[in-house]
Length: 156
Image (cartoon, rainbow, N blue to C red):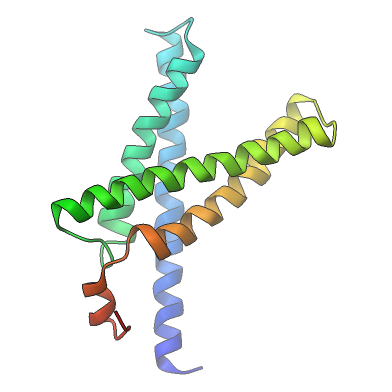
Protein backbone atom coordinates (compact mmCIF):
# COMPACT_ATOMS: atom_id res chain seq x y z
CA UNK A 1 0.00 0.00 0.00
CA UNK A 2 1.16 3.52 -0.72
CA UNK A 3 1.96 5.79 2.25
CA UNK A 4 -0.80 8.24 1.28
CA UNK A 5 -3.39 5.47 1.28
CA UNK A 6 -2.24 4.24 4.69
CA UNK A 7 -2.46 7.79 6.09
CA UNK A 8 -6.01 8.22 4.75
CA UNK A 9 -7.08 4.84 6.14
CA UNK A 10 -5.65 5.70 9.56
CA UNK A 11 -7.35 9.09 9.51
CA UNK A 12 -10.68 7.47 8.62
CA UNK A 13 -10.21 4.88 11.38
CA UNK A 14 -9.59 7.67 13.91
CA UNK A 15 -12.70 9.48 12.67
CA UNK A 16 -14.77 6.31 12.99
CA UNK A 17 -13.54 5.74 16.55
CA UNK A 18 -14.28 9.34 17.50
CA UNK A 19 -17.67 9.25 15.76
CA UNK A 20 -18.56 6.03 17.58
CA UNK A 21 -17.51 7.40 20.96
CA UNK A 22 -19.53 10.59 20.47
CA UNK A 23 -22.49 8.51 19.30
CA UNK A 24 -22.28 6.32 22.41
CA UNK A 25 -22.12 9.37 24.69
CA UNK A 26 -25.11 10.91 22.91
CA UNK A 27 -27.07 7.65 23.17
CA UNK A 28 -26.51 7.71 26.95
CA UNK A 29 -27.54 11.39 27.08
CA UNK A 30 -30.69 10.67 25.06
CA UNK A 31 -31.66 7.65 27.15
CA UNK A 32 -30.75 9.25 30.48
CA UNK A 33 -32.44 12.58 29.81
CA UNK A 34 -35.56 10.87 28.49
CA UNK A 35 -35.88 8.76 31.62
CA UNK A 36 -35.05 11.69 33.91
CA UNK A 37 -37.73 13.84 32.27
CA UNK A 38 -40.27 11.00 32.48
CA UNK A 39 -39.47 10.44 36.16
CA UNK A 40 -39.66 14.13 37.10
CA UNK A 41 -41.22 16.96 35.08
CA UNK A 42 -42.89 15.00 32.24
CA UNK A 43 -44.38 11.83 33.76
CA UNK A 44 -47.34 11.94 31.37
CA UNK A 45 -45.48 13.23 28.33
CA UNK A 46 -43.44 10.46 26.71
CA UNK A 47 -43.45 12.08 23.27
CA UNK A 48 -42.45 15.52 24.55
CA UNK A 49 -39.75 13.95 26.73
CA UNK A 50 -38.41 12.03 23.73
CA UNK A 51 -38.36 15.15 21.57
CA UNK A 52 -36.46 17.10 24.23
CA UNK A 53 -33.96 14.29 24.83
CA UNK A 54 -33.42 13.79 21.08
CA UNK A 55 -32.89 17.51 20.44
CA UNK A 56 -30.39 17.79 23.30
CA UNK A 57 -28.46 14.67 22.28
CA UNK A 58 -28.42 15.77 18.62
CA UNK A 59 -27.03 19.19 19.62
CA UNK A 60 -24.30 17.50 21.67
CA UNK A 61 -23.55 15.20 18.71
CA UNK A 62 -23.22 18.17 16.37
CA UNK A 63 -20.85 20.00 18.72
CA UNK A 64 -18.81 16.85 19.38
CA UNK A 65 -18.52 15.90 15.73
CA UNK A 66 -17.87 19.48 14.67
CA UNK A 67 -15.07 20.12 17.16
CA UNK A 68 -13.59 16.61 17.51
CA UNK A 69 -14.35 14.10 14.74
CA UNK A 70 -14.46 16.45 11.75
CA UNK A 71 -12.52 19.43 13.15
CA UNK A 72 -10.16 19.55 10.15
CA UNK A 73 -13.05 19.58 7.66
CA UNK A 74 -15.48 21.93 9.38
CA UNK A 75 -16.10 25.44 8.14
CA UNK A 76 -15.74 28.48 10.36
CA UNK A 77 -17.81 31.34 8.94
CA UNK A 78 -21.22 32.19 10.35
CA UNK A 79 -23.07 31.37 7.14
CA UNK A 80 -21.15 28.11 6.71
CA UNK A 81 -21.85 27.10 10.32
CA UNK A 82 -25.59 27.63 9.83
CA UNK A 83 -25.45 25.61 6.60
CA UNK A 84 -23.55 22.88 8.40
CA UNK A 85 -26.08 22.83 11.26
CA UNK A 86 -29.03 22.59 8.88
CA UNK A 87 -27.39 19.78 6.91
CA UNK A 88 -26.56 18.02 10.18
CA UNK A 89 -30.21 18.22 11.27
CA UNK A 90 -31.45 17.01 7.87
CA UNK A 91 -28.96 14.13 7.91
CA UNK A 92 -30.16 13.10 11.38
CA UNK A 93 -33.78 13.18 10.24
CA UNK A 94 -32.93 10.91 7.32
CA UNK A 95 -31.04 8.60 9.69
CA UNK A 96 -34.11 8.48 11.93
CA UNK A 97 -36.20 7.69 8.85
CA UNK A 98 -33.92 4.77 8.04
CA UNK A 99 -34.43 3.31 11.54
CA UNK A 100 -38.19 3.92 11.33
CA UNK A 101 -38.31 2.25 7.89
CA UNK A 102 -36.54 -0.84 9.27
CA UNK A 103 -39.09 -0.98 12.09
CA UNK A 104 -41.97 -0.48 9.65
CA UNK A 105 -40.82 -3.29 7.35
CA UNK A 106 -40.24 -5.68 10.24
CA UNK A 107 -43.47 -4.89 12.07
CA UNK A 108 -45.98 -4.27 9.28
CA UNK A 109 -44.57 -6.03 6.22
CA UNK A 110 -42.90 -9.08 7.75
CA UNK A 111 -45.30 -9.35 10.70
CA UNK A 112 -42.70 -9.48 13.49
CA UNK A 113 -44.72 -7.65 16.15
CA UNK A 114 -43.07 -8.58 19.45
CA UNK A 115 -41.27 -5.97 21.54
CA UNK A 116 -38.02 -7.85 20.95
CA UNK A 117 -38.51 -7.84 17.18
CA UNK A 118 -39.35 -4.12 17.22
CA UNK A 119 -36.19 -3.39 19.20
CA UNK A 120 -34.01 -5.53 16.94
CA UNK A 121 -35.41 -3.86 13.82
CA UNK A 122 -35.50 -0.26 15.05
CA UNK A 123 -32.67 -0.11 17.58
CA UNK A 124 -30.48 -2.82 16.07
CA UNK A 125 -30.64 -2.98 12.30
CA UNK A 126 -32.06 0.53 11.92
CA UNK A 127 -29.49 2.07 14.26
CA UNK A 128 -26.60 0.41 12.42
CA UNK A 129 -27.84 1.40 8.94
CA UNK A 130 -28.76 4.93 10.09
CA UNK A 131 -25.36 5.37 11.75
CA UNK A 132 -23.51 4.21 8.62
CA UNK A 133 -25.55 6.69 6.57
CA UNK A 134 -24.85 9.52 9.04
CA UNK A 135 -21.09 8.94 9.03
CA UNK A 136 -20.94 8.90 5.23
CA UNK A 137 -23.19 11.98 4.96
CA UNK A 138 -21.27 13.91 7.62
CA UNK A 139 -18.02 13.17 5.80
CA UNK A 140 -19.31 13.90 2.29
CA UNK A 141 -21.83 16.70 2.86
CA UNK A 142 -21.97 18.23 6.31
CA UNK A 143 -18.38 18.75 7.42
CA UNK A 144 -16.58 19.64 4.23
CA UNK A 145 -14.36 22.64 3.87
CA UNK A 146 -12.75 23.45 0.55
CA UNK A 147 -9.87 25.01 2.49
CA UNK A 148 -9.33 21.79 4.46
CA UNK A 149 -9.48 19.71 1.26
CA UNK A 150 -6.96 22.00 -0.46
CA UNK A 151 -4.48 21.66 2.40
CA UNK A 152 -4.83 17.86 2.31
CA UNK A 153 -3.99 17.77 -1.39
CA UNK A 154 -7.54 17.27 -2.69
CA UNK A 155 -8.95 19.29 -5.55
CA UNK A 156 -11.49 21.89 -4.53
